[in-house]
Amino acid sequence: MATAELQQANFDLEALRQAVGRPDAISDSKDAIDAHSYDWWPMNAAWRQQEKAPYRPNAVATPITDDEVAAILMWAQKGGVPVTTWGLGSSVVGGPLAVRGGIALDTTRMDRVLLVDTANMHVTVEAGMNGGVLEDQLQAQGLTMNHSPQSLYRSTVGGWLATRATGQFSSRYGGIEDLCVGFKAVLADGTKVEIGGTPRMAVGPDLRHVLIGSEGCLGVITEVTLRLFPLTEARELRTVAFPDIATGVAAMRDIMQSGLLPFLLRFYDLAEARHAMKDPAFGSPVMFLGAEGSANMAASEIAELLNVCARNGGQDIGPAGAEGWMRRRFDFSTIENVVNSHGGVAETIEVANTWSGIGGTYDALTAAMKPFADEVLGHFSHAYSDGVSLYVILLGKADDPAGAEARLKQIWETANRAVLDSGAVLSHHHGTGLARNDYVREALGSSWDLYGRLKEAMDPSGILNPGKLGS
Image (cartoon, rainbow, N blue to C red; front, side, top):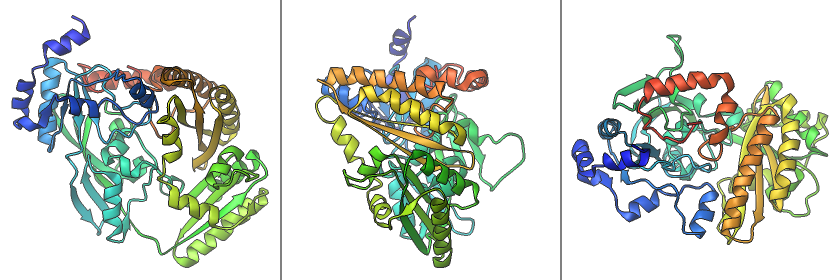
């Protein structure tokens, strides 16, 4: 029997409602299905403009407890019904789209703060908690997660783990894998597990990483404990102009290899510098720097950061550029205005490579993208002692929505090829979703066999987010 026929033959919603024990937890209304048929991948704007919805769930489940999640998964596994976890739908690569129909498991009603533990500086929340709402509540108490993706107010805490997200301050505080203490999850057969919960342990492999970054393909995260930090006393911000890409990247490398830990470290090529500075006549690549801590610590670190930049040809031009970016850092309007226009084409492609490889990746990727957009913008952020991420943004226009759809497909095919050929990783923090799915096996190389064994053992029926992570 074909997959679609199997889904329909076993799709008894009344039986699912009975299994969950709460009839309003399951909906097959058009409004509910429509709301879970598009995420924030720019491809979706082209589909909407053509009144297309190629990936629609058959029904939407909105559990409020992990027991209900377990009941949904047990029912789904018995019937071979696909289950695709949905947070706030903020993926920009098609991650939560239901490729093979089935159930969209919406976690957003699981949104309680369970514990704020100031003795150990942990916060425990349900996985459907809106990240921005949580951060606002914590800051009112003088606390912060120091996890600040641009999508902070559009994403869930569980979604951060599922996609191995990182934030704008990661050069100091790390990605979500560094900030996550532990979590609870439900496996494909309904088994509930609790993983981690202490600062560190040496009892086997770190099992957190089986599900962190698994994009909902190995289990459903239901509760998360993250590290907390006190709000800092002081911040110092600076904007530094560089003569070219090479000198700015060299300064970033020297900063990260010197022991300095700026909370803000972003370097823009000339094309994106003009957007970042809100000045179309701005004449050079530019870096935004930020140091924080006590007033003395912040002042001392920013001085050292500026010294490193000066040694690499950087010129301090004051705080205004970095301050403006801090105020606008959650603003998606430039890309949204393009993709929501008739035939608009915009994309964001984030990858990473070592310091010795990132220059070649920048040259290869920006050159490969130029035929597809009016503007190709690039910046380097999320830096490490051994490398850095690269973010390339495309802005352009096709003749019509069908043309935009076709061009977006070409963009991803070309970009993924250029990235892998340059030795970079396929994604740094957005995950793979649909945009990169066809290249996952090549990207993982010999480790694909290990992932395949995990998938077979943990989800033998293949119900969890099928059509993703190379499947």
